[in-house]
Length: 192
Image 1: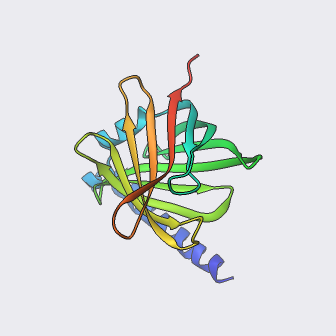
Image 2: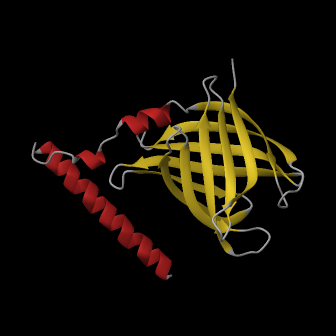
């Protein structure tokens, strides 16, 4: 019951905020602050729109043999082009599997972010990051480790190749700071 009250309060606050902006715009008064406007980073996100075949590998044990993995992904802009939504579809242990990745650039915090949620669990993974010296996007976050069940630091790298392929590598960050790969996925844009 308390969650319903909380949702009503949030809805009222958002409605008041939007109404205030609409009235200010109508009266020619308030200009939108720069942090509320899309920038070059949003144009770059728009370049990722499309449908992709995804192939890669997963490591279930440190140093163990990788297992092949295949899926598809559809990327589209949502909410007036502020965010990129990816619908990821594959199978896990013979069962259909769906995941959603929401990506964006927070103009206030000046950082990229990813929010991942899927049909396997009610746990969302949230990470923040930005470009490294080689142009890859690097994200840091935390998520439950499947072997230990404990919240563990994670890192992902997204690299863009000249041929249009996108490689996403995901790592567990161990207590000593070293990285242990657990997934690598290569996105190839579908043609036709």
